[in-house]
Image 1: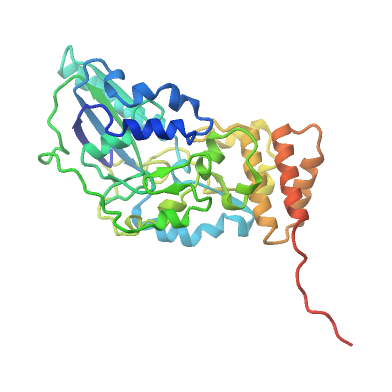
Image 2 (image 1 turned 180 degrees about the horizontal axis):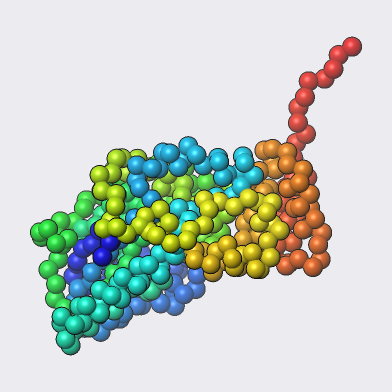
Length: 366
């Protein structure tokens, strides 16, 4: 069905129940209240589907692992140095929720026809299923220190989904018995060291500091102390994946049965690698809708996008002069008709710019 990988594991409650509950108890999920509300289902797939016995897990690839260095090198083409803001790779193409769900529904329907009376329930990452843990159990990779699944060949630029079923299925990837992939992170701490907001500790992420959470899930004011670390990221962040050695190796498998994932390997409309900051700050609701119609990020509100663009603009302006961009930021800060969150963020940026040290230029001598 065009997936980059697939495997099967036995359905079982999470082995990380106490850790997940401690993470939630510490408030590291931020404003994502649904994670706490659905914790009981997430931690036991048996609550997702009654009498579940097996979980089929699939993955799609949204960027080739051996492209990571090229992407890293070319980042400035759409980044702050060029007056643009970047978008995380998974969100640069068509909505993977739509493409994966459609194929999983077709697969579930085919299985129902073959196994009358058996139960099947599909899921993607918006469902209350700990898909990474099931993927690890199914032999599709290991959970890295940045908490993402790392496939030994494809790296971590993947999205996950699957089907919970009441069928008793043989574990593994179809080529033999289940062979769980051991953790190959070793002593490496590149993702931890590179995280621009220090959100990562080994095998845990504090969402309240994570740039992906801040730019996508958090809908309020972002603490100015975090602005600098957000860099030129408008939507999401790839830093921990860009520095991962497992995303720098050659990949032999590229085309997944004719399917292309997220605009890179999946046919369909795609958005750009980034957006011009000055242009985005002038967007209307109609602009937002037309530019993000088929994207996984179409749910982001206009005020969230403008807030993120203002922070990226501030990070650019502290490094380089951009008169039109700074004028736009200051105009938004003074515009009483603007959304209050957007206006407050503009004021935070203006306040930061007012504290810039004057440039040091040689004094003329007589």
